[in-house]
Image 1 (cartoon, rainbow, N blue to C red):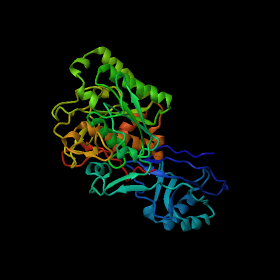
Image 2 (cartoon, one colour):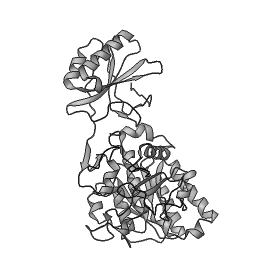
Image 3 (spheres, rainbow, N blue to C red):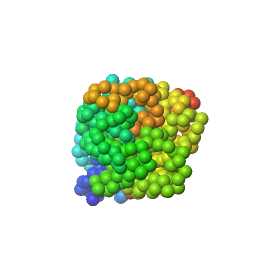
Image 4 (cartoon, rainbow, N blue to C red):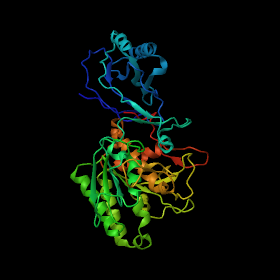
Length: 432
């Protein structure tokens, strides 16, 4: 028998454990990891070394006085600040959540009304790269805190595939050879050669999953090389749809596209109904396959609303439209806005992989634009998808893309007064 508790009164149970046999007068304890949502009041912070987190709930026939007595005992053993409770609308206690040491568990086990099974599940470690670039540190800086490195869950996008659509990639760069994820190519109509003609694609891919400059360094990469023609572009999207199906990547894939939308002669294509219809169909195919799509807002100025595709489809598909800020959180003057923009991320002079060589980087005008904030947010989407703790919330068939978009919007926040909301990995709240 397995125990499952869905989101209720600000708490979300994300992992269940097998039940233990108990007597009629006992309280049942389940070993699990409980993660907070942004508005929850449960205990924040990681469990101290040598301790674990426990979800404890009373059996259906437990009487009120026993429940109240156990609450006092638990608070006495663990400390009031380390115990949280779950109640229904009438105030009836449904469960306790506590951080307990082994000795505290042993003490509680002596109670005639409790039974504790030692937890076999531990939280994954958070890693911090103190030398991370400022734009990467912004992704993990909590509200009210100062940047102190890039802190992230060690899952880091593991098991999630990021498709990056561009004209070329330098996958020999150490940002890719040093990251553990699988790397492979897809060549769209007219595209060939494992190279990068201008460094744009290499920069984008490294911001998504580069070993030192990427948001999700353990994610897998599919480098989708295309030509800047309408047909090659559509064939690239079709190739992604087919690849997701063939490799069964539903709910485990993210698409990042930047340059193609800004470089093609959209004054022609965006007014051709056949092109719009075909593109929208492919995007809806990806939505149905539970693939997250991230697209740039555009570089034509902050006074101009989103004006390019596929971002213009954000009112009918769950595309995550990404604008750009500088490393302080100020909106970049080139970043387009309007109601279709989902979030923003650093996109001014970011550090990223160069077009050739194994160790050269670019960081200046050539690495400035919504082109580069977009793959970073794609990396964030992959990061969230890799967290087991978020599976119950995100992995709802047919709704994964919308759920990821909602999660990003739930946690992003402005870094400067009057500035736009900037994406955040919520590492102090969402842990595996």
